[in-house]
Length: 239
Image: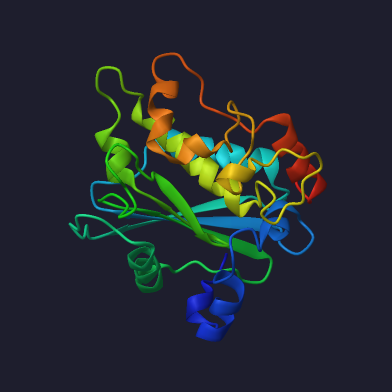
């Protein structure tokens, strides 16, 4: 059983292992060299829990890409909805500091998702941010934005939208693209930072913005890693 590091280790240790740049822990998450299992803490505000199907899809992604022979553990924590009109990344970091309980301990590596009851403060008009990887093991999903833009006529099903955004942000902490996992072939979209230049890939920049909505309607498939991204993960310690 994993013992939460916050009950045993100092704030200095937590800062050392969980307050690094995105991609810093990519190889640790991918390989089984130092960590044999992974704990995924899912902190959600009341009324904004991700769907079971999206959670299962995330688990399948981790299973297919990360070498964790001792398995995956999911930990859920419900917190009070804040009712804010929007959230800054500083707000998100404060929420994590106040509520996260799972930290890397011994052979178990921990990552954290936050699901919020409001949008990002970086939204501008019809342009919106749906998710953000902000530390080496930390990701936020603006669940209200996902709920508000799914399920209606001409809109994607919620689980498809959640899966796409959750898996995309997890891809960033896996070091994609060129963000801690070295590229085997050149495929970084230089104009959009650490994203893939293949518009059909899960790591394309549009996936974490409102531009993805129309691409998931009806029978449209959920995006997956393309061959370049998969090769990067494999070459950096993944399956």
